[in-house]
Image 1 (tube, rainbow, N blue to C red):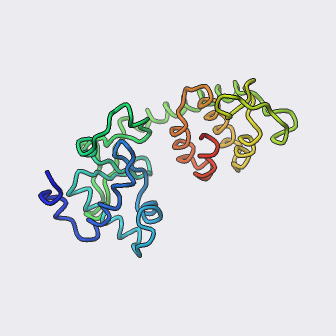
Image 2 (tube, rainbow, N blue to C red; image 1 turned 90 degrees about the vertical axis):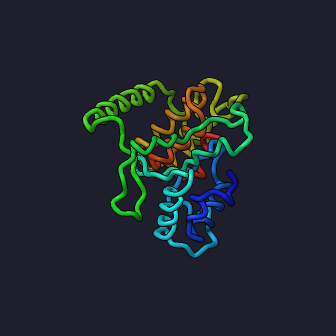
Image 3 (cartoon, helix red, strand yellow; image 1 turned 60 degrees about the vertical axis):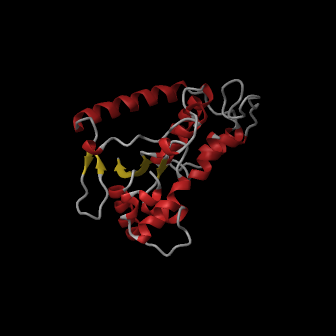
Length: 232
């Protein structure tokens, strides 16, 4: 079906239609985007005098009338165009890793408090189950941190031999000087430990760099630009 014949798109207001088409180029190779009204205002429509509230209203229209779904999941906004794959000629093995969540489905959504609010994801687990799972994650993370090597003698200023492969750490397992300097920029000690754990997993190949960036950004460990330098 062409856009000219798409009843849903033609039901959008002029502003919502404009946002719909401006958002499309920002979707990743899986048809997804991470960010809500404030992120969209800064990155998708920076030259338009639209408030976050206005953009939120447009997102509600887009969610209700097109194949694009927008929802709130654990305090973070996600966008997923369900028709993206059918509209693109992309081979699955060329898309790269998908680090953003799939749209859970309408039956997993809690309706917004008004017709102008976006739906919110309802988790699978009950509250007490979530607490147990979080405790286990903390235990696993603590074990991983204890297994990490200490920084090079002399702190972050000490020289450390660089890995000839990816440059993220030394061949003996120590963290390189530039990466240690980035980690120490985190104000909280637990964030520093988390970053060291993620970096060790990325070096070992058990975690992708984009996943590490996403998780650390969600936790607020460092600014996004620093995380991209650390894990790229």
